[in-house]
Length: 311
Figure 1 (cartoon, helix red, strand yellow):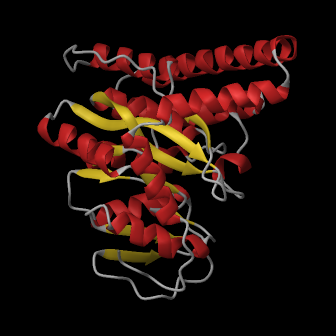
Figure 2 (cartoon, rainbow, N blue to C red; figure 1 turned 135 degrees about the vertical axis):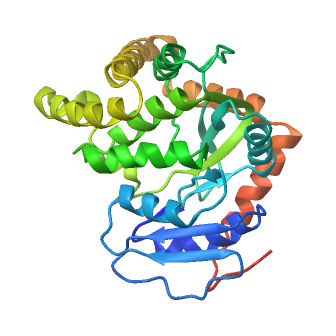
């Protein structure tokens, strides 16, 4: 669990993740160290000023397990789905990464604002260089965030070694590299269930990072050349460009859909009716025993702790 200058979240985040039944490693690049003592099963690494990439690589040097679950300090794995993903990757070595549907919620009200499902279609093709490139292309063409997921340790380490060598200026290339290299390394398991609940928090990483379609062409090309040199050398020539082209095609479709939706929305329904319909859709989509357990889990994470508590 990487973190930076958000100590107010760590007590709950550590307690929640330990409650999932797995050891927790926190890598903190904050100027000051987090002072409360760590409970059994949690390891705290203070790496002041270290980059995101170097934090992950440092943590990976002390991890001995074949699988690694990466999570942000304001995200919460759904226990049943995390277990499902780990069991799938443990039983089938052809899978390199596993993930599922993501929901985003308001921390004060616990209202689900949106959900993000993965449109990637599984394939059973053999793991050759060409089919692996096609799998990376297909995944990036239906892109779903792949950073916060369960990955094979060696494949994840390769991805971050590429990022350390390439050192792209735009942090969005982190997910470009992961979205290219992890599907290249093996198949992608996509659970049909809610995998991760994301808190809509201020000072989030995504809000501070320039979107790729807003980056200048010259700057983007310089980043792409550096990533291409590092990633293709470790995989197959052509992987980076083909996967990146698929991702940008996905972005273009999303931008066009957003434009059309903004233009059509006033003509279809008022904002008030649109919000009501959206809530009904989300309620229908997630109002199930499984979702009710998720909401109970989210409520548990909202308590304010003065120290580490184990439940």
